[in-house]
Length: 79
Image 1 (spheres, rainbow, N blue to C red):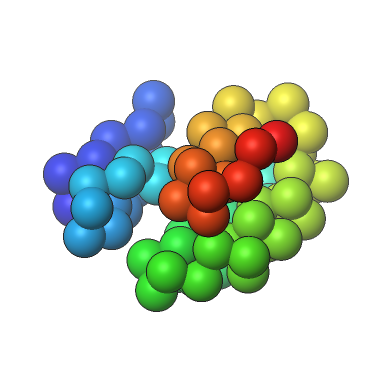
Image 2: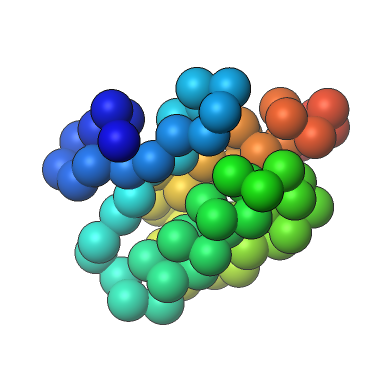
């Protein structure tokens, strides 16, 4: 994919929204990957929930906050 985070390559959906992939924390990473997959399927509520769960493991991770903001934007919600 053509999207690059500060350290690792990520993925993008058909609309070109960046989804960053992180590798620091196993729990947060696994949840982020699941959330990215839900995002790519257009399952905004699921993606939001998974990103929020990931943030419970890594609350200071900027990539997760970025991904969560994109999911909220796509869902048309404010946070």
